[in-house]
Image (cartoon, rainbow, N blue to C red; front, side, top):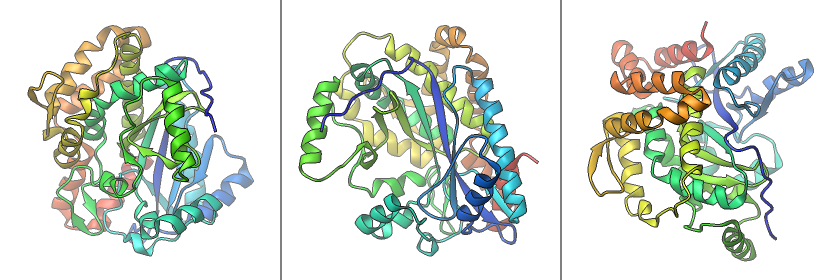
Length: 369
């Protein structure tokens, strides 16, 4: 089976956000997705809203955009409808890459055929996948460009992990990680990075072999950190924790779009050397967040914060062309202040020594009311 890459307008972008559904008693995860979906479908959804793999999750997605402010306005409209439904059910919503104390074993798989199949195949890992991420899509003109962009983005994946990190707590314990969410993803056999193929024909050859072995049926079976999404005509970045605010989510999307503008304009062949240090750099970002380090293409070690700030500065020409400079400036200020969501969550817990209170404060930040 050959995969057709549907061309899309280069540098358009969209984002998906997986959100936590909480009760308002102790702010634990609760089985609210089905009831919320019924209410929203009765009203008529104002955007793309759908359930996720377990019943304490719900996902929203933006439309395709060329302007970050328009994307933020759309997501606020979707949030308003979600909160209206949640209020009627006495539920709360929150960002954050993991819930701080709910147990994954207590979650229930959402009654949808694909999720049932995932649960049958992966057993307890399916429930462990009750983690919450942001996915960013960038439009590409063709499959060859998508393959090259995927490999170029591999070098900056630690940036996205550190900038979005919001999962320091896992099942009632401090994980010592800034982003513990990705440890749940790592357990899947088809996680990690895409094979080093540089054109769509070669990618199709790889896909056909994997499908022929019975390992995959579609692109959804690959849980790579970055992957082409041929039916959308995009490259999808999948490493971000869901931030605690819509503003930060849009800032991350704008950063990805601006990077893609620079990377798609580069006609040189990507180097496989990025994967020599990929796992190390990824671990540093997950474990230490903005305080981590990164080994660059020159073999030199730098702080992740310095690496991000250097890249943000280099992207000024592209940011000017795309109108993303305000979002990049906001990210730069967060890096300078070492202001991550993971650090914010730890401060709240230190002050209150209550996971429930911390979860309530995180929910209030996402709901923005």
